[in-house]
Amino acid sequence: MRYLSGHYVFPVSSPPLRNGIVCVDDDGCIADVIDTGGKLEEREKLEFYNGILVPGFVNAHCHLELSHLRNAVEQRCGMQSFISSIIKMRKENHETIIDAARAADCEMAENGIIAVGDISNTADTTAVKKDSKIRYHTFVEFFGLEGDRAKEIFNSTQTTKKKIESAGLSASLAPHAPYSVSQELWEEFRKSNLESLNAITSMHHQESENEEILPCMIRCLQETSRCLLVHNIFSTEDILAEYMTNTGQFYFVLCPGSNLFIQNRLPVILEKFKKSGIDENICLGSDSLASNGSLSILAEMKLIQQHSPDIPLSMLLQWATLNGARALRFDDLYGSFDKGKTPGINLISGIDFENMKLTAESRTRPLETAINNRW
Image (cartoon, rainbow, N blue to C red; front, side, top):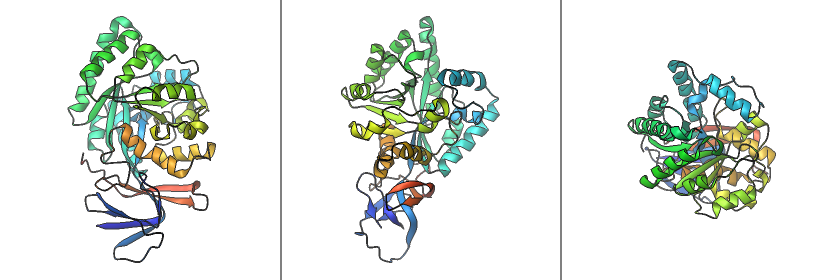
């Protein structure tokens, strides 16, 4: 048994504890969280750290298979130019793709990330995910505007999904974006949803102005049990409220580092998120190394705090941990310091304790991890 403490412990599912203690067994399982009332006394085996202790981070949106495009795409080029560049450059020899993906996977683990929602167009990175310390859920992406090829495209996506699942990994189907999926392809997806209970999906959402919200799209997404809407740069409160008034199953993933990289702008709704009643449905993602300088969830939190300083640290941590775990259906093990979970323990140093804020010097270091393929 290990006893870990810091200036504050953030269980996330409950209020932060000054000088709290996290008790974790040899398997990385949370045995207890002790409220010391702020008065920490010496005890055998107690490990005290300068900073705050938080659960492992969840990266709710990543493209591991694009890791070889690090520093290859021009910044602030706009969405259309970015997509064109990815299409031209994404093909590379298999070894290069795998080596870059493996390095990116290690980078995420070193940055305290224990779970990832990963977008894939192929099964190329399956072996990397299977061997990883991180738990992945793969969203197998499909797109196409040729209605007469809808069945062919969808069957190919299903084949890729089965390859990933045959390796013992969880996977589901995901439309790329409203503007890249034909009505016929939406219908194929809808039929698949009717046959697949508890399906989780993800979609790039409102990355461009005047992005059309299609009725067939809404109907399909409503038939999934979880839907991660990613980026939401041009989403308004009214649009987000429309999703939330349906079934409450929608999660909104913010990737500020990527948004600034590609379009040099953040979601217009960002400062109003905490007032919009959907703060429990917001997650954080890094997107890919093609559109971001790192795969650090702490870096995403810093960006949000920089641009929206009124959002409290406790809320940012919930977005970075428990909400993402819930969205991916990993919250039975991850996301909070609840007894019986194996969420990993991150130390965040460089905290401004007077204002309870991150600083430019804030760093993350995993102290104890639950990432030993126990799922």
